[in-house]
Length: 336
Length: 212
Ligand code: B1M
Image (tube, rainbow over all chains, first blue to last red; front, top):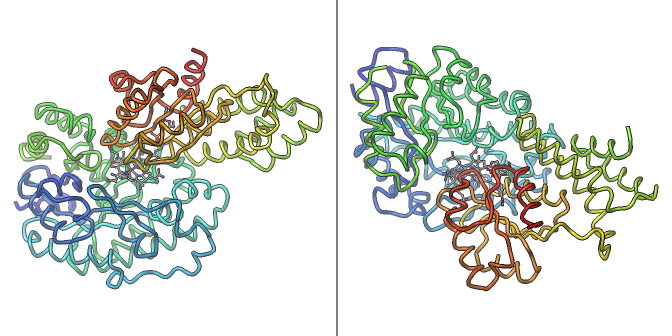
């Protein structure tokens, strides 16, 4: 089976020859080709080179257009670039420091916005170079993360209590931005759309269910209507929101290491495909090939057969290649 | 409910305007500003810390409570200047270290320390060792509280400790560190004076370091 066939078969509930493997890589990937993260973030050729080389070297089943937010800068947010780490939205100059500006924001055209367009071109290139044998993954920001990028995460956290109707408005806006961006990514060749919603783990279950979930659901349903499969990744400790995450209807729920897979399995039922989730730093970067293999076996045991191998979050830069090989080796040597 | 209990509840519920009103009421009733800290603000924020530890409170709840506590401390601070009995528990220079933009945890720690009676010099995020050294000197601080959320920036905590030593200030300040990837053993290995697992632990630690 090719990686592409393997992933799709797993998602369709069909037989696979071994476990699929789809770890998140960004800084690790760019380090493989000896370039700086600035280049990865600003030039889709570099992103495609890094992703294809990394996926081939380690035999991943996918290539991904994942990187820092592309939506926020094209909506007008100020972003600071660094030489060799991901660019970051400048919170002190947040686009929505004044909430009333939301009414004037338009949904950016992904083909006109430079940062979004770079990703679209990256996806087309990934499709061309690796799409035969590997799944091509696009990426968008989830409502909580995207809104934090526009409003400033510290302020957004207060808005949940100060101005719930603003939360609904800004979440609704970001879902529209995300869907429009995803539509173009899918046209360019993305098979799967990843949703990253890191800030969603910072709120209580009550807030998650009342505010975040409905918009994540709208996004997931919209992506399905567009014909994509959906991978949801929420960084951090999601133990308190597992049930909600499991009822969004995502094709893949990708869990960070703080949320044990057996808890996720109990909360989400036997059919949900889970992805993850060894501790990226303690297990993957600082472990040995043997300990990585053993940690992966424990994840598999907890997750059961509907499972894709990965780390809890991005493979950290400076992770020894042998450890990443061990992670992939576990996948290759095990059927679900 | 006593006035102090009402204040505590309003802080826990994150009701800044109510806290402001109650603080003014307390002062108009002749309650000493210095008494409001131990009887209302400190116990309220201790309870907020407990709820955060027990996962009853998440970031939004903690931030609105801290903001409410600040509504009281903003009124009280100017009244305490020159009151020998109400000297701050210590002066803390706090920040997230160079290269690191994560500031939510640092903000929570700073606000909790402030509610516990410390004077806070918040340098923000992505702060160089040099700036920290300057601030310690300029504000005559006795504590440095550093946060890091990235395994790649944790190492910068060590550079700060070295810079403090090079500037001849290491004996003068206690250094505490925290943030998700930081551990007790890491703190020890870089020569920090203490590690806080979470914000309540940071407050306990600051109290004990300031008293030492
Ligand atoms: C002095 O004494 C003390 C004592 C106790 C102290 C203390 C000091 N400081 C903290 N404490 C303690 O008290 C607090 C309360 O109890 C606690 O504070 P914490 O700070 O630990 O906890 C906070 C209250 C809540 N936690 C947080 O605020 C962090 C939340 C998550 C989602 C997160 C966020 C929000 C952000 N991020 Co970033 N981010 C993630 C986080 C994933 C997650 N869900 O956990 C994490 C931390 N990020 C990460 C990464 C890699 C990154 N982030 C980046 C960027 C960002 C944003 C800017 C988008 C945003 C930060 C916005 C902001 N203003 O803070 C990039 C780097 C930017 C930079 N140069 O800093 C980027 C590199 C981009 C990327 N690839 O994701 C990961 C770090 C991995 C690692 N171990 O190195 C990460 C764990 C996500 C992940 N799973 O990969 C305790 O640790």
